[in-house]
Image (tube, rainbow, N blue to C red; front, side):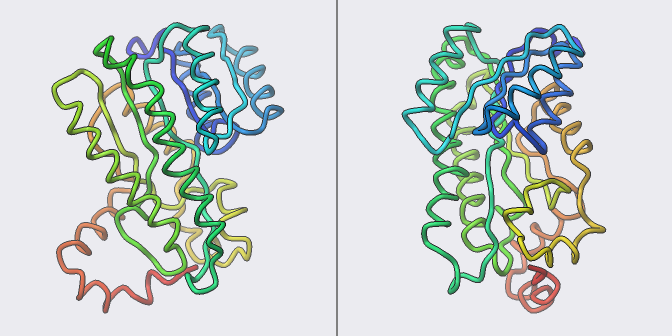
Length: 263
């Protein structure tokens, strides 16, 4: 608990799912969650709930991370009001699963704006202060899809490949500082994420027994805050598949093609 006490932790996509769970858990440990998302009503409700149950003075700001100008304004307000940011959790993101020939370019453009450019914009706003203080932690929520593409997720997988590429490059740039950069690569999680990604429900039904519980993922992210490392893969066995795929791609295509076609 001591490691997070009085830390200012900004969480994007904080109004539901993993973001909400992480916010609750860090507040219980004495950190101040700073909630960012598009839904002001959900943020306000969550903030009030956290403040009622803890004494951390949880703050919230309405933000669409795909709007880079709005990102600048909101992060400037945060810096003015709290002084500095100790940890940034880039959690905002969404997916739409479609075969590429049927997919909308507009949907893919929006995924890149939120999942990649929004994440980079938020990181850019906190990084100068972290570097000046020589202290901080940036946690980017990527995905196993960033390591292993699957049918009907070409646009989403491309965004998460981009997140991992950005994360790895940034980590190397900051290697001689005390600013840590981590990637979190979960498999499917039992959240409202799939209400948009998988409107038919077919994918959820086919992988339901493998889906991660959001409390478990949030707990692992909180542990990562206390003990930073380069990458967190959830579950571990799923990451083995992506490693083998990179080592033996042709064989993996033949053996797992049907297995991975669940959407």
